[in-house]
Length: 531
Image (cartoon, rainbow, N blue to C red; front, side):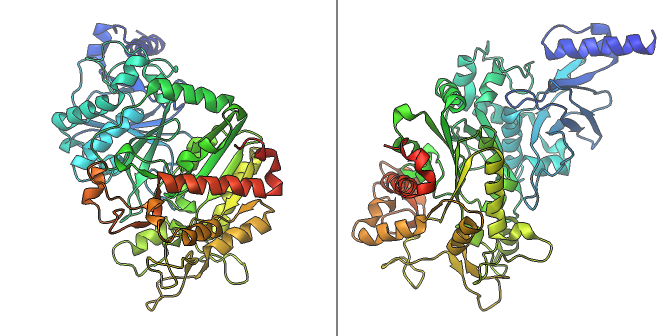
């Protein structure tokens, strides 16, 4: 048999394994293969697929344009850790100092005599994530990089698969996946063709969370197409089932919308898990302020704990920006977490500076940042979103951050005053000091942008509601209705959360944003879309 013939037979074996057909038995016995598809709702084309086995043996291969890969498995010892990194040369899967690549993982606990299928997709990444957390890693990438595949047990993988099916079983069935009793996100052959399991991946956003003590990527977070959490409150635990029909309808609406409104923000705007109800961000309810017939779709990828810098570096912005079209609005609302610049803070100080911190402008409105690190300027970090929005033909809008219910002593109380600034502490923990809200305004002026002064609006609102402010900010008294808060140290009526909102407050802030659009001449084209 010549070399060309052997290669043709090998490719035939790989293709039939991926499609779920019977492979050539004699070839499979002589050449055990690891095959699968790297999929994200369509293929992760030309991704680099890497494998490490229980003894530390490593190998890699490149997937093709359809996301299919094949790797000789002879000599491998199960379990195997498999990972995929998007094409393009960026290999950073862990650190937020630079843009993180799109990285996914999968796992195999036993090898077959012939072809062993190991798909790699957001569902398999969460399975590996749950296993990693059970092994005391902060996320799947640390497990992959550590190469400790030998510690993975079939029991841990099976438990993670069972939990995953609780969240995705109904969606998979609705997508036409047959025989759910035998379905396995890892080992059931698939194609990245927007059908079956790949249709489910079409309406799932995938990311990896941020670990505060290290500033590294952490456990896998999955949300639906409108960024409702499916899993993400902790590194393991129950899923909130994916409503496949609703998500498909919303994907269609996003693509067909006359105007998409993208919310770039933090916890004050974010969409939350049902477990944390009635906590809500203003972006979660903002679509309610548009006329139903206006054809507006709000994409709210705002994420708790994120700063302007790592919201981009961690890939949160890119999830919704793929839908951006000319005429859309991009509302840029950061400032809370960019203040995490105190190097002297115990435990988190260095990590916060590395991963979250960006520095405000000085008193003369000039950007401040360490030498050679312009990305650590808050203004320059904000300008990134401005440039990306304008490049897509969209309209960027600057918003100052919402207020905390703090008085002049920076404690809960009244009158509420501006708080988005840093002052040099006694131990010199801040490399630069300044006013973050002022920097937002500086950016609006320098880039000739519409500005909504949401800090001023929320300060005025808080001071007008001194007696009933707990009805708007998060202050839960009914633990029977909201049991999550019975064990929390903040967000209760006795110990209110002075930063975040419940539904009434989120809706009030969303109304202020709508009011700001109406008040801004540069945004008059969007006023007719509002109720």
